[in-house]
Length: 188
Image (cartoon, rainbow, N blue to C red; front, side, top):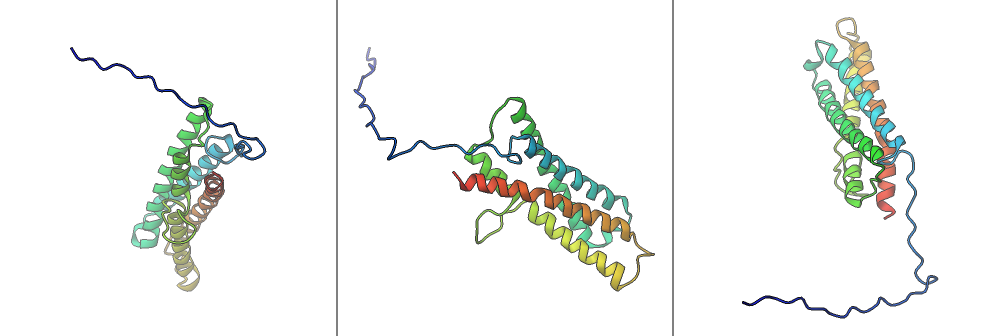
């Protein structure tokens, strides 16, 4: 019977380095607003709350489906709601088990989801650019209906303006989260 036998190979000790030449790496402290912190959880809950408010106000009107920009806003805030609540659950988990979400893959996922993937070039933004674009398009249509066409008496202008404002506030809540994630990813 042929059985393989373990082989022991000598291992060299790592060379001694001078601490002055190679100082130890210092980890950046968790700043409130980063994933896995109470501030990050608060930002995610604000994003979710304002996106739900925008969705609820827009869907409560009967004629939002007649305008493409309003349908786009509904789709964008639904995506914003799903993204924000899933990351809020992840933040809650990290806080409960007292774990840091400073893994480079996790930070890359958060950054791609919240903002721009690269400095120049393609936008891989899943939530903030969609929400911002939808809010801008809805604001343009709301101004057209209210100020230019003067048909607010026939439409739900107040509801459209409120939903658009909630979408903008949701986008503003995404911005600090993106910046902190991007800063943390860039400092690695």
